[in-house]
Image (tube, rainbow, N blue to C red):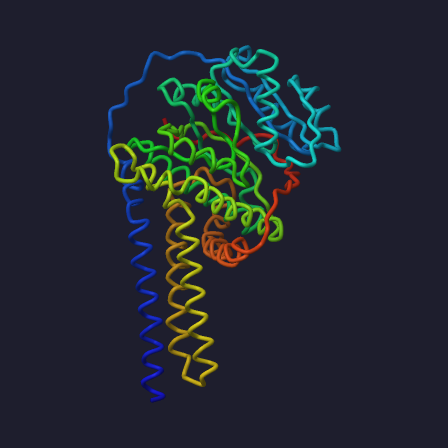
Length: 427
């Protein structure tokens, strides 16, 4: 009986592992197309170039340490300065953020609201003020940046070319200005490069909608007016905006030649809370838009809806199911005095397989984006092997996000990097 029970336990564990594996394949195998698509030659046609007028929107909360660098990089753009205005909302600030913005020639609005807290509310306030001043129609598009960002000098020029092709929203190539500070900042940076070049670039090539990731994107005035301003206030307002666009048939474009840099957390406690907010925000977005997106899956031109549904959340759920099931079976084996070694080994296979997959992704992204990762070569190689650890920390984060109340909290920035590296994207 003992042997039969042990065999049954091991069998159940193996069935769970294989089921999870097949579920992952069913959910994400389509993304192989995104890896291949950019390397298939395709004729590009562009509309006659128009020099559009833009407003740059920056929501800043106690960002006196980094805001000046962003404003300087905007002023240094290879794009007519008379076609770019800068608006900053100093949101619940207790430092000199507003004064620094004024000194750099920005239009500044100070907001004090301790109830409606978060970037979404700050952006709504800023756009409402621009609209009340009858300045909204002065602009063709609106850039959205975080205060810690830095722009390559050709950023707006490149984004303008993609916007000129008729997109109502355009996102860009997200790099990190503190890539090599430690394994945490590197994990962030490498994932963002993966999102940009191996998801959004492939989506752009085959005509799917791309997805906004936090910051560094542009929205047309027409879309702002259609949405009656900014109305995205969930914990991940960027994902909410993306889901709303896709659910309503708006295609987001991607400009790989428009490169910007932002600062990543270096402390695990800060990273933990930020990513828990992201996961909680994913849950909120799926609750709000899931049914609408699902109803359009399978309809002509709506593959982006399926892509949006598969983005991130299924991976969290499947990973949590695998981990919970595996640990439960192992504990049961221990409590019933069975030989749980075999069961534990089967459970460990999931972790090993996941780590191996993340290692391959990290190596591939590092090698293909080598020139964009600004650190010593031996550190690039070394950090490839810490990337799976960074990704595995999402497992307990996702568990906690399911049951814990999560609120938006500001992240302190203080990177001393004030200039972007030399551009290296080939023509």
